[in-house]
Structure formats: C-alpha cells, structure tokens
Amino acid sequence: MTIVILPPDVVGKIAAGEVIERPASTAKELIENSLDAGASDIRVEIREGGRRLLRVIDDGCGIPRAEVELAVARHATSKLRTADDLLHITTLGFRGEALNSIAAVSQMTILTRSAAEETATQLRLEGGLVAARESRGAPPGTVITVENLFFNVPARLAFLRQPQTEAGHIADMVARYAQAFPERRFSLVSDGRLLFQSTGNGSLPDVLAKVYGLEAAREMIPAGALAGHRAAADQSPQHPAASASPAAAPANLAPTVWGYIGLPSQHRANRNYIVFFLNRRWIQDRTLAYAVIEAYHTFLPVGRYPMATLMIELEPSLVDVNVHPTKAEVRFRDPRAVYRAVQKAVHQALIEQAPLPSVTLPSSAPTWGQPDGWDARRDALVNAGQAPNRHQLELDLPRPTPAPEEQPVLSGWPAIAASPPPSDLPMLRVIGQAAATYIIAEGPDGLYLIDQHAAHERILYEKLMAEMQRHAVPSQSLLEPVAFTPHGRHAALLAEYASVLNDLGFTLEPFGGHTYLVRSVPAVMHRADPQQATQEILEGLAEEENLVDDAREARLVRIICKRAAIKGGQTLSLIEMRELTRQLEACQSPRTCPHGRPTMVALSALQLEKFFARR
Image 1 (cartoon, rainbow, N blue to C red):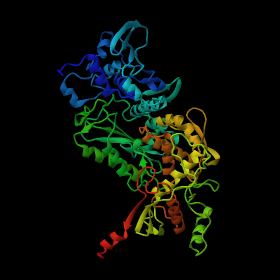
Image 2 (cartoon, rainbow, N blue to C red):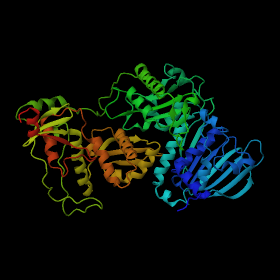
Image 3 (tube, rainbow, N blue to C red):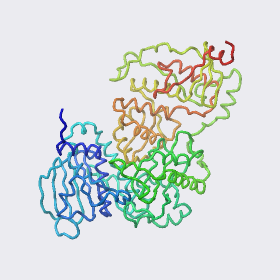
Image 4 (cartoon, rainbow, N blue to C red):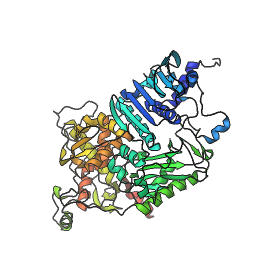
C-alpha cells in the first residue's frame, strides 16, 4: 500500500476521538471556553444525557463576527501566539482543538455576539462543514448547541452508556468547575429539570453544600491557607481567588495549598471524593491523592478514604499542562515540593481542628456497634456446655438454603440443585483466631488460615443468590424512614438501579427532587446505618460501572455482601468461628470470595515438617 495523506474529514474524526470521549468531554471543553471568556453565569442544558442535545449558554465576551468561522478551524485559538507561551499557560484552554473536534462529530450551532457589535452571528455546522450563516438578535455572550453527538461515528456512539449515566458524568463535571470558580454561577438542566445550581457568591462552602449536601459540608474544615481563619472564612463568603482571572497564580515559586477537607468521621469507600485544582484547573494525580491519604494515616479505618477539595496555586512556568489532549494530567517541575505542601496542609489542619471522636446518642436511638446484651452474651459463651442459641450470637450466619426444584430460575443464573453438592473442603476443626482477622483451623492434612471477611462474603453471596432465584430476599423495615439525597453521578445510578435495589430488599420512595426515603434495607444489612449503606452501594456501583459483561444484579449482590460481611479486626467467639467455618464448608465455591480473592490458605503437614527440619 502506498503512503497517502489522510483527507481532512478523517483527520478531524481522529483528533475528535482524542479530545471528545463522551458528552461530558464536550461539556468540559465548552465550559472552559466560557470561563476563559470571562463569563459570570454559565448554564448547561442537556437532553438524553447529552447525546441528543447539549447546550452551553454564557454571558462572556463573545466572538467577533469576523472570527466566528475561524474559531471552529483546527488549531485556531486566541490564547497562544508563540511556542514560548506554552511555558506559562494562564488559561484553561489553549490547544485550539475543542470546537473543531466537537463540530467534526456532531451538528453544532454557534450563536455569539461581542459587546461591541449590535447583532449576533449564528453559524451552523454539520460534520465540521459550514451549513448556514446568518445574523440574529441576541444578548452579548455565546450559546453553543451540540446536537446528535457522534451521529457520523457509530462505533463511538455504540460505546456510550445509558442517558442517566452520561447525565451523571456531566453533573460531576459541572460540580467540579463550580468548586473551582465559586464566584461564577453554574446551572445544569437535564430534560427540563434543574439538577444543579450554584449561588455564584464566591463562597466555596456554599458550593460544597450544593455538591455533597449540607450535612457533609458541615463536616469539612478549612485547610492550608484557610486554616486558622475559620471564623473569618465563615463570615466572609468570598473565595480567596474570587477576584483573580481564570487559572491565576501567585508570583512566588513555592506552591500554595488551600481548600476544605472532611473530618475523620466523614469518610468514603473510594478516592473519588479527593478533588484537586491546579491554578483552578481540575487535574487527576494519584501521587497527590496518596499525599492526602497519608496525611489521614491512623485517622481513618482501613479501606476508607477522606473527602477533600484542594486548590493548588503554582507559578505556571513550574508546571507543564500540555501533556494530554484532555488537559487532566500535568507534570510538575518539582513534584516532591507539591506533594509535601499538600500533605502538610492536610495533616496540619487535622491536628489543629479535628475534634476527638465522640458519640452522643439518645437512649431511644439505634446503635450501629455491638448489640445490646453483649456482656451477658460473652458470659454465656465462656460457660462450658452452655452454647448460646443462634439468635444470641453476635453474627447472623444463616446457612444458604437451596432453591426448590419447582421454583423458576432467572435468566442468566446457574441452576441450584435441590441438595448442594458436597464441598471440596475437608472437615475442619477450629483452633482459634489470629490478628482478629484469620481463623486458624486444623484439617486432616495440615493447618488452614481462613480470611473471615472473605469467607463471610462467600456465604452471604450464595445465600442472596439463592433468595433472588426464589424472589424472596428478606428485608428489614426501619422504624422511621431515612431521607437520602444522592448527588452527581450517584443520582443517575440510583434512578437506573432503583428496581434492582427494590428486588434486593431496599425500599426507596421518591420524596421530591433527588431525595429518596429509605424505608427498608436487606436483612443482611440490618446492623448498618441505612443512609451510609445506600451511599456505599452507589459508590461501589460507580467503581464497577465499566464491567459491561457482568449482570447488574450480580454486581449489586457482591457490593451488598462486601458491606454486610464481618470485617477484619473483629474479634469472634469460638462458637462463631465454628459456625462460620461450617457454613463455608457448605458453600458451592468455598475457596474464593465473590470478588475472586482466596478465602483460605493451607499449610500441609509435609510443609510443617520441612519448616522444623523433621525431614
């Protein structure tokens, strides 16, 4: 084959594939253009998750009439002049590819008017080609409408998720820029409903309350440059950089870190709530996230992660933002200095402001720790020959019951025989517990170490799967319903999985807006905080959303089992360990948990003899 130069339309689609991955990428590029244009009010409207329509309206400086067509040309920008300008980028956009890439894969309309002109200019493009141009009446600013995204790239269109999921990604994007620019007013309207709106008063705590909810925002403390001035920060709504231009940075060379972090009591199941902005640009950096996590060392339970919204201000010449077309990754000239600044700001705020953990509950309130009568139960356990009944145990470990043969089997699920096949595990004799995490058992061929969390996950998983086949998942009704308000992408996930959650024992009722009432939870989670349990399940779904080949019911069951299973570090009685081991022996797949981790390791008698030089 001979070497040829690709046609312009093919080049445009290839470039668009790097910049525009999904509707949220389109929203990101258009919002950044609006911010660079000095807009104080930015409104995002979407239909069908942005696939059918995505419109961004701003009151910025607009595009002069003579430059409208040039604005959609590739590598056309007003933000760079020479290669030296790449060394000190002070705007969010600079590559000159966004509008051209969006136009290449959509039907785009630009309506813009600069303050110096009397009429606006409307330009319509299809697949990157100009279809019409005319003068219109409009206020100063720009309105960009993107319709039928990826209409001419069916392969990319096929990989988009459900409209609710795509709308959730756009909501997350709008929320991030609302945090970076609290002095600008952001609005998001999806299918005619107002999903999000910031005040634009310059107060970052007000934006955090809109994004995470009022209760979560109250549990966040100032850090870095804001630490020590909490009273002043609470009284003055102005964001420290509210009067600065987009991506403005101080003149000194040392990084400045400030923002808000969650108290140790406000933790989450993943790192998604650790958000960084470099010179008001949202960035992703695993090293900086690790710095925050390390600052919380010994403050949080194992496997839990903090909440943090941190602004890093750094001289533009000390960072390279021209790393990736999406501009989400950056390279620091001195990454260690930035790492130390972030860790120091977070750790110092925790030391100075975080209160000692305390729990004050009324006598009638439910408790989520040890159940009532724990001391009496322990006394019963130590009495020889007086084993407590099943309901007296700390753990609820019912044996998985096979489904009757006459019950219908759900499509996609393997049939369960009337009597389970014999387990491939030998009979085990429980000896004790190591590190409050591993059960030590003896078998005919040596010793076994059983991970109590992984083993309990397997037991609960097979139990819930059998109950789902019988359409009989038991639930625990709450004495009083609990209000729960998901935010951002979690709102879309809850709407998408509401029926499946209902089949698994949750009862969720709409309560106006995005708020739901939780009236019941699965019986296996009866000791959990209903609001926190629902939040963690949505976080787990967000983590595993790309596993498209997995049945969504199986994903939910795995997540519920992980949250409901006993944890490492929990002391068990000998009777509880024996019961857990017996139920594991009765499982069909006892050697791994639902996520594929081993539930046990074996140390054969032959290995022991070799260790002690008996052979």
